[in-house]
Length: 252
Image 1 (cartoon, rainbow, N blue to C red):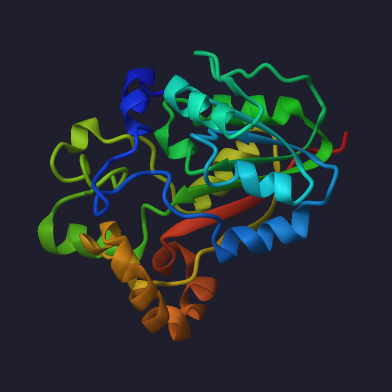
Image 2 (image 1 turned 45 degrees about the horizontal axis):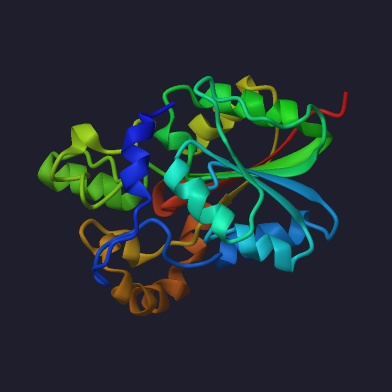
């Protein structure tokens, strides 16, 4: 686990409209595509690392999916509870208060890169899932073109966890694990999952250094980048800034 005290401030909303905050925005087209493939009304879903529930909690209720969120930040959990979500704390050993073999699906989005022992978190998710059930994992791609260009021309390896720390104090950045497609697959398989498929976020210029924090520029940059989105399908390890893995708990 990462230091819980960090995430108590991490989930406090900023009053500065131009300042980065982790709860802005809703589901994106890549997430919607995977949800459409795997989620059905009546399913029981666990969200490991749910944060304050803004991004996925309420949308699951609209889909008729029973939502159970888990996080280490009490600040985030208090906010999620105010939204009417069923949320509980992740224990220091990464376990969650949830019955074995009982969840129909799990999501773990932008969490594994924050954890000292991501394999322990995946073992927890695997325990909670029904045999044959799926989990959707997502992580930043540490080997994407923007990261490579920044390191090539500046010699600086940005953790990328928050604009407040990535350059100013990278030793305090929340990203402590780094993944590319092969590493994500290896983590999933060594944690007891069957790897079903990799889904790569389409290429976008909004992933460039410094620019990624300017959310107001993203619609324009994403529009310019759209004709080149196919690049990430051919070369996900280079052109995709975010990776999704669909994995399955073995049926037997």
